[in-house]
Image 1 (cartoon, rainbow, N blue to C red):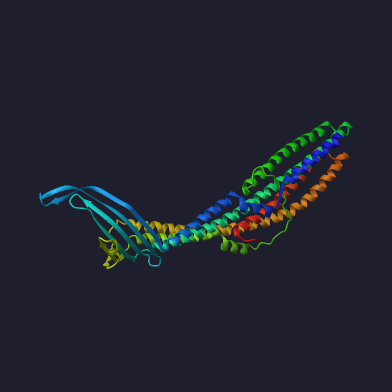
Image 2 (cartoon, one colour):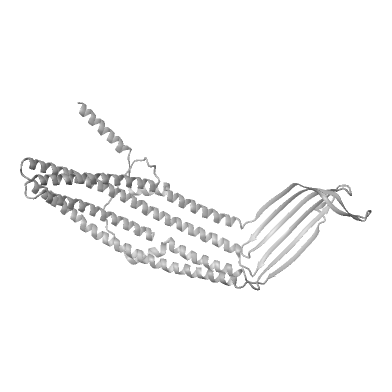
Length: 476
């Protein structure tokens, strides 16, 4: 009765453990990874930073408004003034207290690389000195300014284009990180399944070895076989049990690796339930190459690098070119001892400054900098062509690997059936005394190898297909 109760308790505990374990398919693993994994979170932050940088750049091209206040600005010191009575310079204590406010509106002009500014100033001042009584005055000033570079490199437009290009590169990098994560999660998923199945295969081998050993011992005790044959099967059983411990450790490590990769807690219990149905696909090599060249983010990023290198040449070359700048100012202002009077009957001030900058001699520094930038451009173009050729070779190799894996799966799946049949026949022949324990051991190893090789070939096919989808960004 006690043994029955203990058995029931053990079954119940096993049921609770199985129930608490999450059984996850490949779609579940990918869904978790694309939300919780470290790599996708890092890629999200990188993309978010680039997006905000672009938004900041665009907002920086709008009108900005700034205000400043001096409340107050106070100074007091000794100043040297000429005294007509003594006919010499003497030091007197003097100072002032100022309350001032400044308002600045600035609008960059992207298409012309210019800037329009409106600056308003208003202050009240109280001056005092030892020579005379204190005095108050008020001042208002409003200035319109246009600064327009001529024949110069458009830094505003270039900065905006660079920010847009960098954002596009970040977005492509995110797409690439996402594709890499999908492949890595798929690989870890199948590696865990392979470790699990390998554990089951070795476990079955242990069971078979135990059965063979028990049969051999019974035959040895009956005097039907020599002791050395029974001892050989005992050695095989010990070896199988050792392999089982190693397979169990590999299974646990693969389980932990998958959880770390997809962002699950290390103490969370999971198991995988993949569908390993073999559905052979016909992959057209030319189409696969076309998808890769059309979709690969790294190839487009190389194109962007070429454009950035071209912009760098233009920017460096413009440093020593003839430049001019037109600076226009128009303002109204008024100073008065009464505050209300500074807002009427304004005086006008205006100015025009046209500045021309002519580079004369720099010992060839700018020329060398341009040549260096041109070398970088040639390198970017070379990298693009090399990347394109590598992608073509890479896709061809993957298609060949897929075809090879398909052939292996078809051949090895048949070998498992043959090996199982051969083992069962050998076991019966061993029981009847027609073959030795060594022959039975060899058939058992062939069966284990056949199962393992078939599993490896099927998983290799699945992973190679997943790698092709990662490298082409196309779902076949």
